[in-house]
Length: 287
Ligand SMILES: *[C@@H]1O[C@H](CO)[C@@H](O)[C@H](O)[C@H]1NC(C)=O
Ligand SMILES: *[C@@H]1O[C@H](CO)[C@@H](O)[C@H](O)[C@H]1NC(C)=O
Ligand SMILES: *[C@@H]1O[C@H](CO)[C@@H](O)[C@H](O)[C@H]1NC(C)=O
Ligand SMILES: *[C@@H]1O[C@H](CO)[C@@H](O)[C@H](O)[C@H]1NC(C)=O
Ligand SMILES: *[C@@H]1O[C@H](CO)[C@@H](O)[C@H](O)[C@H]1NC(C)=O
Image (cartoon, rainbow, N blue to C red; front, side):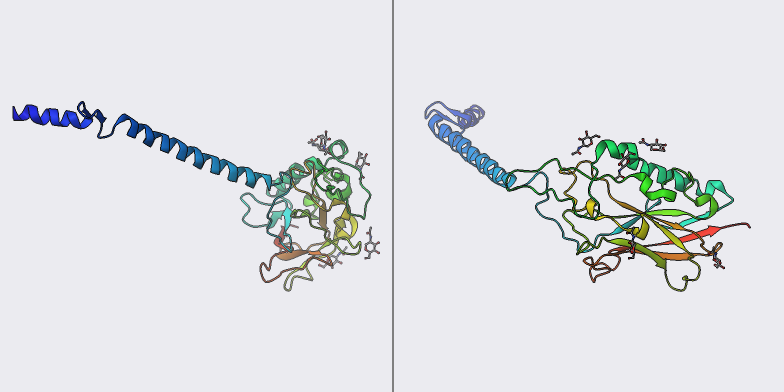
């Protein structure tokens, strides 16, 4: 009988017919608890939604709210290696397989700059002045247009006449671009930023003459400012090509290219590689 008593005690714990309690609480007590939690969670959800709503109101789809204002954007060269370990360009003229990847990569890189594509996507801008397309207050001036950068501007380094970009003759071209910075206006007083390359350390007698395309190695002001990927969907970054005409063969030549602009400081304390790029160029020749 003791066993039976224990069993009914346990049963009463779940449902007590005398006090009409379920798990120790009456129906109205349970009702209140459930109601409390429903209200509590609705309140939390509401608070979360409200916070999100306010946050999203402050964001602009076309412009980052916060941006690490790099005072000096980086320079990048092409062709580059994958994975991008070094920028070194080393090959032997007589061994086609040692250099044919370079023109291939440049072809790939330059294909969006084909004149036909630029004419279709982009706008013919007025050179030597910023292409400003500001929003007027709340009225967004989007999408913003971008300026044409025709592949033919790169002339001998466009890969159009000389399919090997000079690699075959030991007069290779490299292409330089300046990393995008939203809103940057490089160059004060109508002086456009330009790129110059030179030899590092004691390699200055080995670098030989260089040609820049476009001439003077300038990034025209009309490609600035950049308004961001979403606002300016068709933006084509301006390029500068450098052709090495008489580089000493069978020797390493350490080269550094840098951006010159009257309002872009080079190599500040935060990043001494800012605004410059270095690479090793070595052309081997059996002859
Ligand atoms: C760009 O032009 C080159 C040379 O004319 C051609 O081989 C290439 O297919 C073109 N690329 C595109 C995407 O049209
Ligand atoms: C780019 O090339 C296209 C097609 O040849 C031409 O119509 C356009 O004027 C060129 N743009 C510039 C800025 O030279
Ligand atoms: C971007 O390019 C496409 C063609 O590829 C063109 O239809 C569109 O109008 C261009 N957008 C702007 C904003 O220039
Ligand atoms: C190149 O620079 C020189 C000297 O700074 C200047 O006289 C010349 O007009 C420039 N050429 C071009 C095409 O910008
Ligand atoms: C090429 O460079 C060599 C020295 O490295 C020099 O003797 C020669 O005159 C240069 N040729 C030209 C065309 O500049």
